[in-house]
Length: 194
Image (tube, rainbow, N blue to C red; front, side):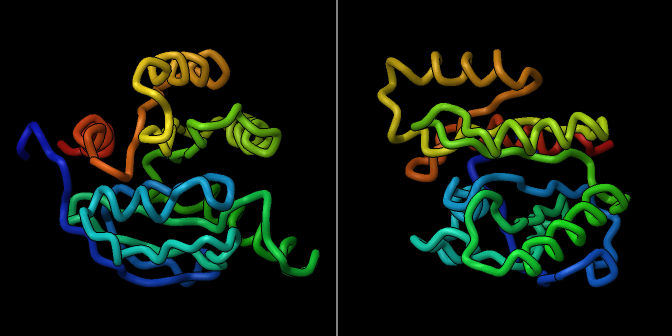
């Protein structure tokens, strides 16, 4: 595997509502957790260098299913519905929550969760709540700080340090504009390879 990777071919595989519908693969899997509009689709598109791979939307809460993307048969990314914003009934939200919990707790292919937070803002209450849930189950997780292209260069390190202080563990920056941080993200995603 090349040591300096800016992008990797990604293909959309399938959408699933619940665990029983997830694809039968042996690849390491990385579910994306994040608030609606944090940039999950842009993250997927940036890694694949394909702006049309995952649908981006200005309307938060568009993703209603778990969308699976295969990256060159090296790993899978699972785009989950964003938390914190969705114009759906309580009943629908509760159903999602049940399905997502089952997926996150029982899907054997999951290597690590990836929590995305918006670099332009302080960590939000529902980001903390999500992290607490993950920690309660002792699930592996690392953090990606999105929209770093909107953060002045002189402040980027401070933003990363602040998230490290709050969440601990590995924290990586991401910019959908120029992909300059992609190599470090790929190193993290590919470290599961033998």
